[in-house]
Amino acid sequence: MGTVSLWKILPFVVLFGCANAPPTGGVENTIFETQDKAKFRVETVASGLEVPWGFAWLPNKDLLFTERPGRVRIIENGKLRAEPVFTVPDVEPSGESGLMDISLHPNFASNGFVYLAYAYNKDGKRVKVVRYKYATGKFTEPKNIVEDIPASPNHAGTRCRFGPDGKLYVTTGDSTDWNLAQKTDSLAGKTLRLNDDGTIPKDNPFVGQAAYRPEIWTIGHRNPQGLAWQPGSGLMFQTEHGPSGFEGRGGGADEVNIVERDKNYGWPSIYGKMTAPGMEAPLLE
Image 1: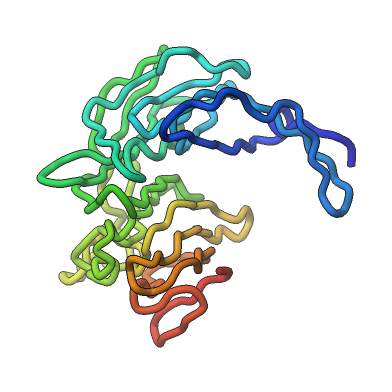
Image 2: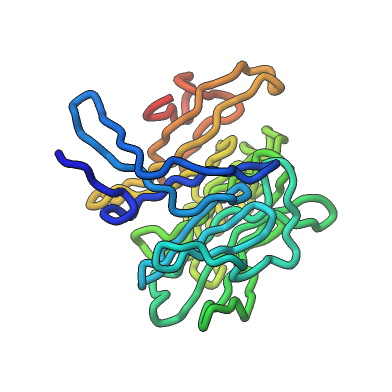
């Protein structure tokens, strides 16, 4: 295989952040070779960023992305615009949380809807997803899609993406109160499934069950922050951060899970390759 540019050929971007000071430079046109002699060229598209977290490709191939302190930035024709496109007014960045994901509606080309997921303060830290209209370079018409998700400076989860079924899926962390992941009346430590306007799909697995929040798709998650679907099969994959020493469960055991409706992924009862009746072990740790 010859040398290729990931930026020019593949819709694949890796984001790196610096919490304290911006980097003075980056990797520029560096060639990497794998064990089987495939070669890749890595190009720095933008530098000097402050914890970039999520990104979304516009139909014209420009790239919108978020920075944790609350800024939405744009890379146009391969160059970073100096000023933010938008700054979220009520974001509360601290620890690992702040402005996190950004996603486009499947029909963005016709409706202009963009979804921002971020931490805010409402009698303590919370997370919400807000829909905006994006047109002529401006964010307008905010609408809360889901709010009051328990959060903390750590374990705020919050990847929000549209699935093949056109529904919006939101991953939530346990907000460092890990027992919430098994509480079915809490939105913490869950995968949520919503219509694009924030209403509840009638075919969600726990609709009509009084002990469950109807938004819930799956339970038992610690801090899931990666979400993708396999083309063809429609399988949902999630990546999830494993336990740390402060939880008394040892470090490591980050997980890759195949996530399916109404299943329990075990946290905090099991993690890593542990098993228990009625709980799912990961595909990979």
